[in-house]
Amino acid sequence: MMDDTELLRRYAANRVEDDFAELVRRHLNLVYSAALRQLNGDAHLAQDVTQLVFADLARKAATVANHRVLAGWLFTSTRFAAAKAVRGEQRRRAREAEAQLMEELISPDDPAARLDWARVRPVLDEVLGELGDADREAILLRFFEGRDFASVGAKLSVNDNTARMRVERALDKLRTQLARRGVTSTSAALAAALANQAVVAAPVGLAAAVTGAAIAGGGTATATTAAGGGLVATFMSMSKLHVGITSALAVAGATGLVVQAQSNSALRDEVAGLRQQNAAMATVQAENQRLARTAAEVAEMRGDDAELARLGDEAAALKMRMQEVAKVEAARRAAAETNAERVDVTKLDQQPVPKFQVRPQYPPELKAAGITGKVMVEFIVDQNGNVQNVTVARTPRSEGETVVMSDFTIATDAGGRSGSADAEAQRAFEAAAIEAVSKWKFEAGRKRGRQVPTHMQTPIIFSLKEDGAPRPAPDSSAP
View 1 (cartoon, helix red, strand yellow):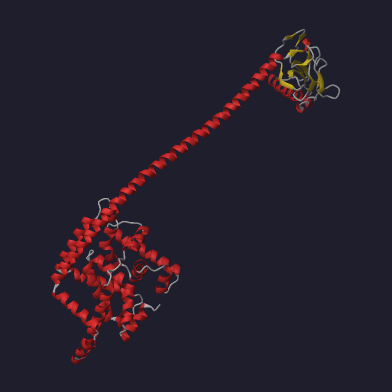
View 2: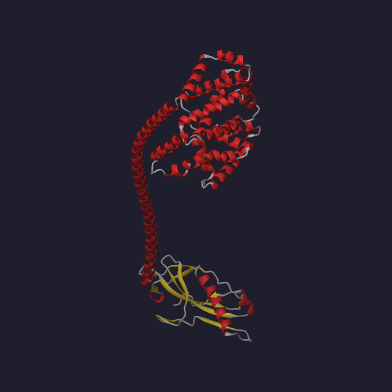
C-alpha cells in the first residue's frame, strides 16, 4: 500500500484524482470527527469544515508532502478551520440549538454519558493541541486512525515496543491535561473512550463530495497563479463533476437560510430516530432488570446450598464425635464389667501362672548411689492372661487372708538422704516396676473351669545383692 507522502507527491505532480481520493478515504473519519467535536456535534457544519480542510490540502499538496505524519497536519488544519467557522453568529446559534437538542436526548439514567465522554469531548481537541507534535502524532495514529503499535512504530520510524511506550506517555500527558480542566480519569478509561468515541463515521457520500470540492478548489487556486487568459483555460479544462460541485457550492453559499432550514429538518429527523431508539432501549433495560433479579435469586440459592453443605459437614463431624464418645463409653463399661467380674486369687480354683516376666531395669543413678528399695505393684490379669491397670499400691489393705505389705521401702547409704531425694528415688523405682510388670504374660486364672480376670499384687524388690538386678518377691502371686 502506497504511503500518504507518496500519494501527496504524485497528486501534486500529476493531479491524479484517484490518488487524492485515496487520501480522503484514509483520513476522512479523522477530520470529520475532529470537526464534529469542535463544532459541538453540528453534523452539517462539520461537513463544511471537512471540505475546507481537504480543499486546503489539495492546494498545498506539494508543501504538505514534506510532513512525516499527514494526520498531524490534518488535525491542526481542522482546528483552525473549525475555530474560524465558530466565530460566525449563525453557526453559534445553530451550535446552541444542537447542544439543547442533544441535552434532551441524554438519558438521566446514564450518568456515565454526562461524566465521561460528554465532559471530555468539548476540551479534547484543545488539550490535544497543547501536546507536543510527537505526542499528538502518537495519539492520532493510535486512537484516531486505529493503527496497531507495529503500524504506529513504522510510521514514526521506531520499533513496536518504543511505539507502545510513546503512546502510553502521550496518553498519560493527555490525561494530566484533562485533569487540569476538571476531567479526571484513568489512562485505561481514557484509552477506551478515545478508541470507541474519538472517531465517528462520516455520512455516506461525503467522501465523494469532499474529493470533488477539494480538487475543484485546488484547480481554481492553481489557475489564479497563472495569467488572466489561463483562468478561462483552466475552467474549461474542468470535468463536468468539478463544474457541478463548484456550482453547488456557490448556490449553497448564496442560499444559507435554505441550507440552515434543511439542517434543522435533518436534526429533527435525527432526534425522532434517537427517541425511537430510546424507546427500544427502555425495553432492553426492563429485560436487564429482570435478568438482574434472576441473577440475585440464583446467588441467594447458591448461598443456601453453601449453608446446607456447611451444616452437612458439621453433622458429619458431630457424628464422628458421638461415635468416639460411644467407643470411650463402651471401653469404660467393659472396664467396669471387668473390675466387677474380677476374682481374688484366694477364691480361684487355679491361680494365674506366670508365662513371661520381664525383670525391671534398676535405675542407673540409684544403683550407682547404692540405693535399694521395694515397690508393691497391683494389677489385673484378664481372661487372656494379659496384664492391665498396673498401679502402685499406696495403702496397706487386707485381701482375703493376705495382708498387703508396705508398698515401698528403701535403704540408704551411711551418709543419709533428704526427703526430696527419697521421693525422687521412689518415683524412679515405681516407674521401672510399672514398665516391667506391664509386659508380663500369665496363664489366666480359672474358677469353675472358666478363665476369669484376677486381681493380683506383688512386691518388686530393688537390691544390690547377687547380680544387683531387681526381682519379684517370692510371694509374687499374693494375694
